[in-house]
Length: 191
Image 1 (cartoon, helix red, strand yellow):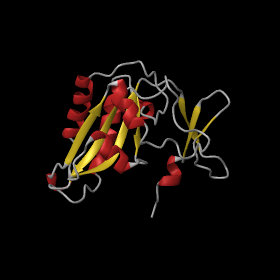
Image 2: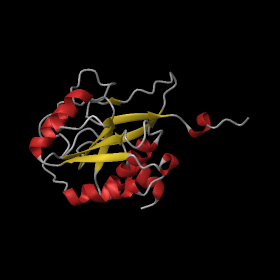
Image 3: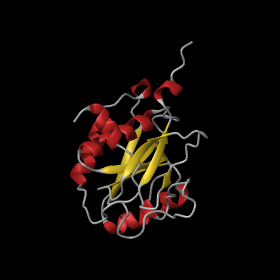
Image 4: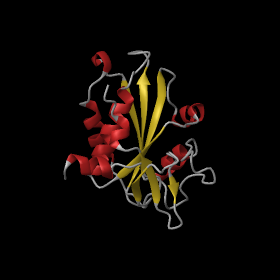
């Protein structure tokens, strides 16, 4: 697969085949990709917690907020929830900030997932203290992000931004998720 196709396939999926299992080894393989990415000052402060069992997944799910542009949607219903999560943490004994390390790592994990035929979504809207308590995360670790993973159960398409400039994603009557993207020429400044 060409790299551009892999990037296009890597959408923010929010509905999955919940019964599609993702093994601990696949999660390790995804984090191994992230491990190889650049890190500010090569500090490598990111740490990861896996969830791939239904009981633990249900615990993680309750501390996440889904799709801010879909205000009447509380997230995927039972049967369409992720089959795994990766919680990304900063070990604050190694670094007080992560700069953009977690974004690089998360994108690499999601590209790896897309190459495996999986999909996912980066979630930063987290009830962090609740998740910390539920997963018994020591206070030296700052919760940065949760990546939801699974076999996508929805179609996500890229559209151009309309004439009014609205960039809010939406679902059509058929449940297809539409993501407006700005045109390339609108992004490049020829100064």
